[in-house]
Image (cartoon, rainbow, N blue to C red; front, side, top):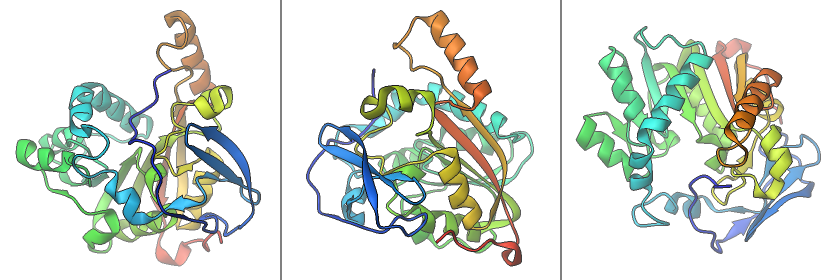
Amino acid sequence: MIKTWSTPVETETTRTIPCILCGGEVFTPHLFYEGFSYVRCTCCRLVQMNPQPEHDAVRRRYQEGYGGDYLAYELANEAAFLRLQELALGDAGVDSNTALSVLDIGCATGALLEKLRDRGWACTGVEISPAAEYARKERGLDVRSLPLEENRFPDTDFDLVLASHVIEHLNDPAAFVAEVHRILKPGGHFIVTTPNIAGFQARLFRGRWRSAIFDHLYLFSVKTLSRLLTGKGFAIERVRTWGGLAAGTAPAPVKRIADRAAKRLGVGDVMLIRGKRLPAKSTLSAAR
């Protein structure tokens, strides 16, 4: 089975931190792979790398010349990725023909933003890899190369924030979600797509699961991600999962059956959660 893109496993300075979801400090071993491993919080059951690499080390992974040609990878798979993103918007209940102000965090080469811009959307992107320069030069998009929190977007600036396969890469997903809440308009939507640690594939393959990779610092389930979002002021409006078996792991007819079953039963390999930003006075207390 082919794993998703990841930078090479290497030794980095690490430190043990409390669980970002519940503040717990007791962890049990969970998943092991070549050169790295995951633990599970005994309190909230969030799966994470802990000890965790320092923020600067994680940021260096996505810079030019580190770990292979990420831009070439994105360009080679751009059409397939765009199709998946459009399907995900449909699953999230977003009408792409209704113009909104949107921020796409981890927008890569900007293929989705380009399509939305051409339909009249006000589009902004965040991308810290070299793909940002491609999106700016080749597509004329407003794509920022700083991490989300460092851009200092105005309060209540966007109708919609997208984060597809981003949150699992971050040192502090809780701070990230809080920043998304700040920059969304009241009633605006946050759509998060990420691997599903409670899905069928994760349970079947465990340490060989294609999303158990060096670059994924957190592996969420629907339960743990929903808890994070509600703790930072979002109401959960929609949850979808998809992906029963990875391509190449089973004959095509078997894969089709598995994919349909996984989506229907909510045990897909990837999950999407749509959260609605509540007014500040309705924000729930932080989970910790």
